[in-house]
Length: 242
Image (spheres, rainbow, N blue to C red):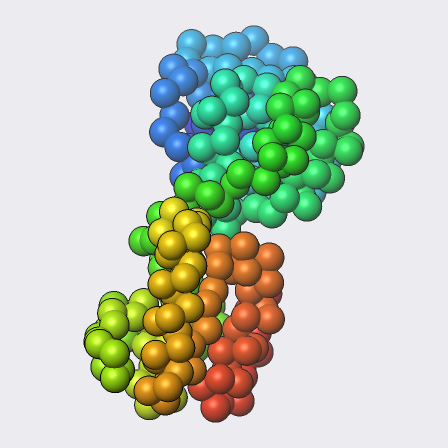
C-alpha cells in the first residue's frame, strides 16, 4: 500500500506485484510495480508503469487499489516469458479469478499492446485446464458447493457393487448420488474412458446415479451445475451465487 500511495493519486498495484496479491504466482521481481497515469520520480524499490486504466480494469483487494485479475494477466503478457504467463493464467482459472471473455475484451480494447499476440495464441490453443490436478479440481467443486449452500458429500468414499467396490470422488449416500470429477490427466486416455464407462454401469446397476463433472463445466457453467445438483439431491435450490 505504501508504494501505491508513494506513486501519487490514481496509482494502482500492477504487473508482477498485482499477480502476487491475486495469488497467481510468486513475485520474484525486486521492485513493487505500480501503474499510474501521472509520471513520477521512481523511488528505490519501485517500478512505475504509465497507462490510463479504464474503471473496469481496477478493483480493491485487502484495501489496496490493484488491477483486476484480467488486466493483471494482460500486463503480465508484456513482461513474462510465455511459459510463466501460461502458469499465471492456469492459477487464475484454478482460483476462479477471471474468465477468458474478460481477457478477450482487453485484447480487443488494446490490440496493439505488447503481449496481445501471445495472449491470443495461448487462448486459441485451448490448453488451459489440461494440467489441472485432481486435488485442484476437488477444491473448485467443493467451493461451488459452499458458494451455493449445497450439502457436503463424503469424499473418496467406497461404494459396493456386484462387480467390486469402487472408490468414488464425492458421494451423497442418502440421495444415492455420486459425482466423479474428470480431469484431463486422470481421464484423458482411451483406456481410462472405457474403464470409467464400465464403472458407471456397475454403479448404476447397484442403484446409484452417477454424474461426471469437468473442469470446463465448473468454469463455464457453475450456476447451471449448482441448479442440477439441487434437483438431483431432491431439494429446493437457494438463490444461486453470482
